[in-house]
Length: 472
Length: 166
Image 1 (spheres, rainbow over the protein chains, first blue to last red):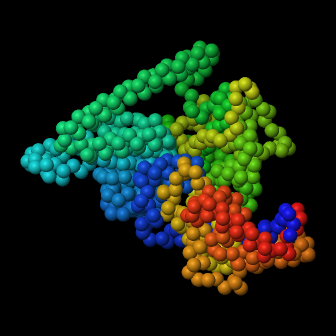
Image 2 (image 1 turned 30 degrees about the vertical axis):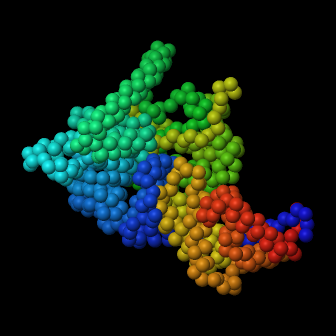
Image 3 (image 1 turned 90 degrees about the horizontal axis):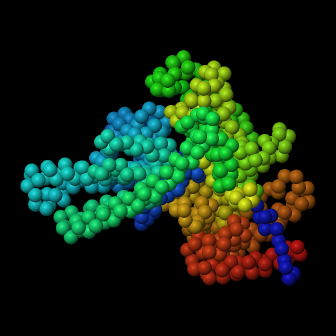
């Protein structure tokens, strides 16, 4: 035998999946009866929730994976989950109820009385979740709501209180009920009394008698919520425990004050920078959208190896806006056709450029059509699998081109697929704006293209090669 | 749509593992479907921030299904891999040679105990580290190392005539 023998193991070729394998899997998943998910009882809830939080990129997958399909949607209904249960709410929302959760709905109004529920809501009119602690309002998103302290009457009765006390106890408890809202995609407005806080993807908030408190991250927010809920649950009727809670609360308030102080310093610095920019700009527009990026913004993104963009409506259809929606956007009913046509052209323009990259990545035009605009994730993944370093470099180069630090490639230049993809995606909204401008004028087109009330898909990608300042 | 993309992304990898563990046949697709369905159900428990990559996680599910399937019934050696089609563009001679080599590898692998075969497939075809193999097979790291070493030794012995210098 040779000292360094080699054999071509790849000659042992594997069986390939049939072309419609993914469809078969999906059919099977759909056909699955709603039996309990495998092996999740021993896993902590926080981990499961953390999972959903981590899914923003790969992404909507988790949201989709968290759902199991049941029957036809009802416009009215009620569900109480003994085991994990998925229900369709109206025509555009699905909810996954953890054991013990309870929801009741009428159209797009949901009352969540107990427990932990994950929601996925397709874009459309307002969708509201009312909880004992406050209300959550969304347009189209993935988010979760956890409620604690909502059913204290049993504990109060066991404590031997009279009927009157029970009543006031229940009211009191309802006021001290806690809700936790975590947003995985889209935007959510959380309101309590007259207070209203908007949350974006990756953010969370706690809602209680002390109002709506935004958390720094999903993980931190949930941790604080669980600690507070556990403390509230175990502290009833015990003075010592109450004192402990008070001490913890004081400590928590102190931490919050410190965080606010730090935030204040940060905001003051940002304000100072903004004022400086304002004074140096000759009357430039204020209140720019997060996706109205200047070359300076792109240069900052390039340093971090990031790419950020807004793509108009990524769906293949459903570009029609209701008269109410048009009115809200400050448009006349006849402008609906202008928007619809511009969206359609935008989709064709973007997909015609992304599709070849998608086919190149997965090797099938048919599959590319099925995957549609989910494909950018796969294109990036596949290129990273081929050459991680090159994909990372290509990622940042796209930001540098947008920053004007590199020339825009010509039609015959060889461009890395990842760079090409990000150039297409980051140009999409401007092209849409230009299209609208032909009918509505440049100012109106810009306003609409930057409006969060339009149908948009916003993305921020990290993972590109970071540039250090010295290099620049 | 997102789950379909996930399946498309990993279907070849899962088929590759299962067909090398079980040999070609309809059972491969059945178990590949089962792998994705289990992944779908268990995804909320997958720690995306943890060390395991989605691919390693899927391979773990598929490997365990394959090992269970092999336990349930001792597979008929005639159902084993026929080494598949040669890649397009190869000459008939190369194609035949590759098919023969592929068959020889499949037959040699079939002689391995199931756990050694799993370690070999995970290491050689899917690039898993010893630690990842140990986790996938739920065995200590040293055991994984030993199984892989023995598998390679046995393969080398069985394929003596096929070895050639680099």
